[in-house]
Length: 269
Ligand code: CA
Image (cartoon, rainbow, N blue to C red):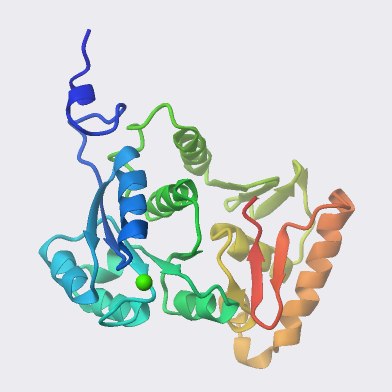
């Protein structure tokens, strides 16, 4: 039996009946834009590539994408300004956005994240990593429902569907860590951790956005009831006790990354 999708010009496992998510890609370097275009389209997405911010604004206004990938260094406007412009367009705040940055200093990354963007990728990046990141963000923003079954053979999709199953039970799995929000419980290597309220809040916050760097202020804001009464070192102190509890389970593993002078993130590997 012949599969009509094989002759459609789309990826071999793409079902032509399922609408494919549009990904706006704003990148002025032709080589990088081409790589991203290829990676996304072979994974079942419809990339719309724009080389300037101006073009991107028009494109975004004409049709809302499922997600936007914004290069920080654009010829007519920087990616952060573009992000604000796109957010101001109707429906703009609902579209997850991911920054591409060539300047890998942590400050740049945090500036990007403090704007409320969903993630960033530092150049050089692997196309596979980019596509995986796009899938994860879409899944989190619950825009995945129409295409989660499309690319059945890719390993990423297997991981994604496993993650979707886990999510259905209200569990978030990050490596050996598992967050059960309903029970307010975190397991590490299947062992339930006995955490204080703030330790739980900190780890749960990091786990909801693996890899995302949180500044101390952001953590205070999200985890503490009265952040004004607390200090940066309060966060550090609780991270320290949290790490000790994780070490008690696995001495050689530290799932929390410290970004000196910036904050904390959950390791993604
Ligand atoms: Ca650029």
